[in-house]
Amino acid sequence: GDGSQIVPPADGEIAAAIAAVGPLAGVVRPEGGWETLGEEVLDAYLARTDAVLAADSPRTARTVYTAMHGVGTSVLTAAFARAGFPEPVLVTEQAEPDPAFPTVAFPNPEEPGAMDLAFATARRAAPDLIIANDPDADRCAVAVPDTATEGGWRMLRGDEVGALLAAHLVERGATGVFAESIVSSSLLGRIAEKAGLGYEETLTGFKWIARVDGLRYGYEEALGYCVDPEGVRDKDGITAALLVAELASALKEQGRTLLDLLDDLALAHGLHATDQLSVRVEDLTVIADAMARLREQPPTALAGLAVTSAEDLSQGTDKLPPTDGLRYHLEGARVIVRPSGTEPKLKCYLEVVVPVADRAGLPAARARGAELLAGIKRDLATAAGI
Image 1 (cartoon, helix red, strand yellow):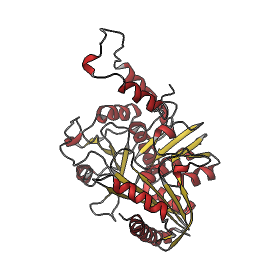
Image 2: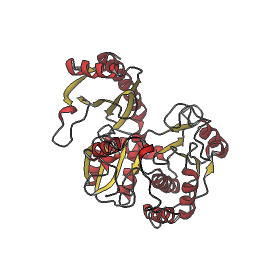
Image 3: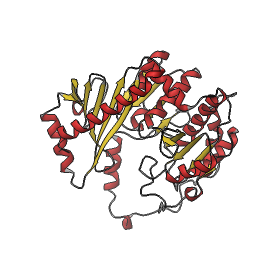
Image 4: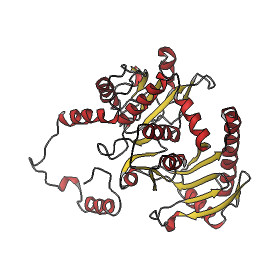
């Protein structure tokens, strides 16, 4: 009713109603009684996308864009044209919808190899950034030029984009509440606190983020961003792409980049480095056994960092309903372990925060962050028996 996804108990009630229907062959179908929506719905959405951007903002960033064989190309290019951005250079091999997804092993920008064609296109076109949607265009991935990376382009993590968009909205004077899922970086909370804005953590999924009272901006690390909750109360890869392009344009006018702004955030709040340990299984009992093992013998230290507190999220907290997960707070780090809700995977979300005094200390802080993440990943895998 409010434009967000369903949550318990409505999902179970709907599933029960579906199960009670019986075989489709026995369902009587009416001849009418519904309305087929036309292009006016898309027109209204595109008109709304203009509201995401500041009225007088620069629109100079040049992009390479891939729809990952999905539905995003026509909508994103129309939105960029309305906004006055340069026409994106398309990754032509992936621009048209194709349910076979012939150029990728799995059509998710986070998967290894999925962005290779976009990187190749960018090396020819030399844009300011790469933007990718997943096939249904509700997620948004961003890559930036980086001479320190092999091939010259680096994918930003979802947490990095999440922090960049938050900082941009703060700079534009946003009010309201910033929200994120518990598996996303704690940096958002620090940005909100410094700006005097409200902040909320929710369970994983936009069905929970979208329900935060007074929501102005919400994100989760899996490339999902809600930048216009009054227009789309869910993650939306088109409006997120517009906001990223606006931010890149504003920085470009100053002779700066998205990486420079990430450095600023590290100096202001500490270097927040995140990673994930994800284990795909054939036998689901492996996941259940790992969770049971961690509950029975919780780790006392990871990568040499003492575990200062542990929470079994299946018991719920004063702010979160129960969910199958474990959360560990360490000295300068945080770990969350949970079974995936959509795939046969055990997922562990890792974050370390490394203090950094000045810009010269950033390389050492990044190296220390990478070292700690690798150690936590190793020790956690041992503790879970995976």
